[in-house]
Length: 66
Figure 1 (cartoon, rainbow, N blue to C red):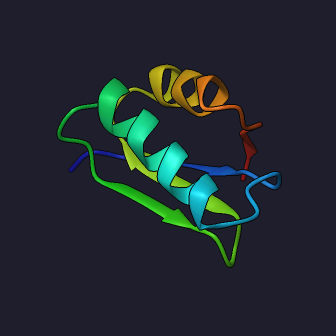
Figure 2: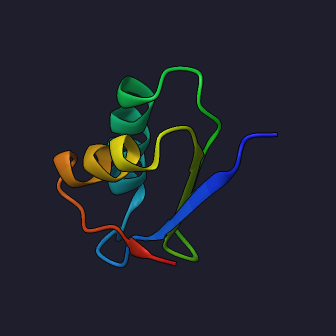
């Protein structure tokens, strides 16, 4: 079983943000299991933690340890 990484992304505020983060993660981590939850401001994914964190930053958001 692959561990999931969870980040709080408190500057995610709308569905556009959700889509931008999901798209960036899908490009950086093909085949990863990705969950972007606007209500809780949590993003979780399987795969390389550093690549995922960088993908969220490249999308313009600030991931923090959750």
